[in-house]
Length: 256
Ligand code: IPD
Ligand code: CA
Ligand code: CA
Image 1: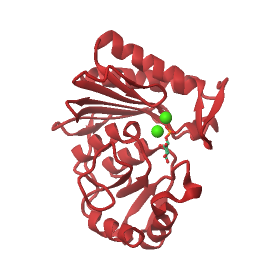
Image 2 (image 1 turned 90 degrees about the vertical axis):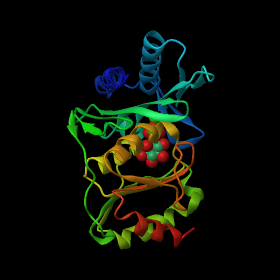
Image 3 (image 1 turned 120 degrees about the horizontal axis):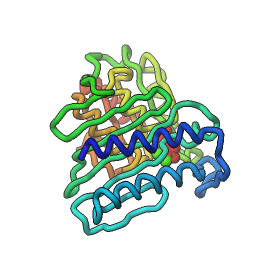
């Protein structure tokens, strides 16, 4: 199955790249900061058609069109374009994220970045890979020597989960904090050892499902803000190389 997930993630990613700068429709979804373009929709249709053709009857949870075939044991969790705001500015940080859940457990995932031609992938229990090369998280064991990333939800003005205060606290405790604009890539960068940790609020399963599997398969750790077992259906996430996890939770606890 992973080969098929990779095949369509790459195809959809190439479609995004080919269509950069060719957006004909941009709409706001509730907030002026939450955008969807005809290219998000085109990518999603491509992926859904592929699933229907190759895995008839499988369920789908896709960002722009929601749930279909909910009674299937399988669920494809699709973000057809993660980093839409970047995409609309031709800022080259965006990707396609596709995961497959089987009986409620994520078993395969791929995140494809068409700008760097980077394919992050994992199968449950089989390790994580970047363009076929095995991934391992960093050995950093102190927050003050760690580079982190985060993102902000579309309703940031309401400061959900005190996300602005968490940002301030990490800024003065970590070596550096980055904000790239694609949660799936942020998380995969922890798997790839380019970042040591990540946190965010109000994410959705399509943002995190594939990338979280990839990072845990690379040796990373993931929990909610209270240190509890993480579910892709919850809103708060802390993810790290494992060694700085407790320190990250301690910083978050200051503003809970
Ligand atoms: C968004 C990106 C961004 C994150 C937002 C997400 P989208 O996804 O992942 O980094 O901060 O919360 O919604 O809308 O571009 O698919
Ligand atoms: Ca997304
Ligand atoms: Ca999206």
